[in-house]
Length: 195
Ligand SMILES: C[S@@+](CC[C@H](N)C(=O)[O-])C[C@H]1O[C@@H](n2cnc3c(N)ncnc32)[C@H](O)[C@@H]1O
Image 1 (spheres, rainbow, N blue to C red):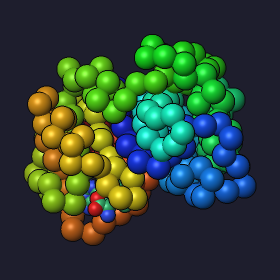
Image 2: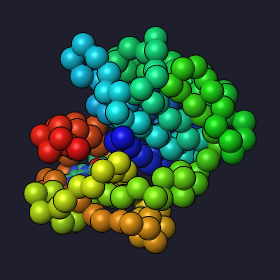
Image 3: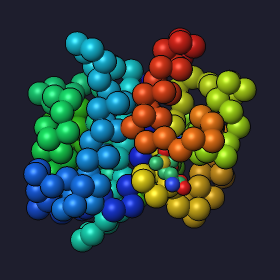
Image 4: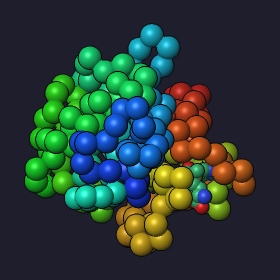
């Protein structure tokens, strides 16, 4: 199973954002939706071996984490607007620390980034960062968890927390790419390595 975790500093935690203004009223929800698209969709299908966790830390009631599971999602299409409409619904379903089913393959909760990492801690965790070890020199183990920051990056405090576990920093080079493009690159690389 492949797992992606995206830390969104500004992604709002109220379902009242506008589908016509994902960057502004959604707190860069456009970026989050593109990450979900890159993680799960291939041409004419879904990656059934992949989950993506989105951790929203924006106002008014952070944190909320939503997971999209490729093995079971249904009725979701790859465009940003449709993904955002499911995120709206999932935000409204996040009531406590336990996962609540929103629909097949979409769960939401009040888990924080650190709660999610604790839940995934038995897997090898790779933080994507420009100043890491170059991808070509890293052996990616089975059931990897790839952690990415948003347009500002992953807060230092959260990376320090991840360091307690089975952790490595991966770099795709010195160019700073969009988070969604990094996910596409990692999916390509794992397809190539057959992981
Ligand atoms: C647009 S970048 C944010 C860059 C931000 N300016 C910073 O200082 O972290 C969003 C995320 O994509 C990932 N990323 C972007 N370029 C990368 C690269 N060359 N290697 C590894 N990860 C990268 C990182 O996880 C980063 O937090």
